[in-house]
Length: 156
Image: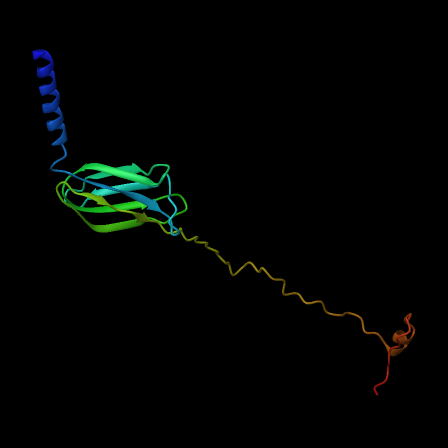
């Protein structure tokens, strides 16, 4: 019985110490979303402590969720990006001792940029216009085979 009581006391003491391990820390959690509110799995998330410059990088889960624990109190900058989406940067995030901050991140669809270079020496349109090289006389016009519609060779 004494051995069981000692083991229980050691276990409870360990749990109390383990529970205090992040008492002076904070955490960020949330979901990465698209413009319609759908979750974005596999998004890259970078959390930077502005004062120390230290960074942590994680990837959102299949449900678009993320959680970063054991963060020192202070000001943070969070960047998130996913394939097909533009980089989103959030600044002015303040994390206090013991704080668990819910930070949902909405990503915008990345715009496409297309560059077309036009050279002055290359023409994309043909500027050659067909020009007649033969002049038909009135006699030649009168002798053309007809389907019943006649040509007039003299003005009205």
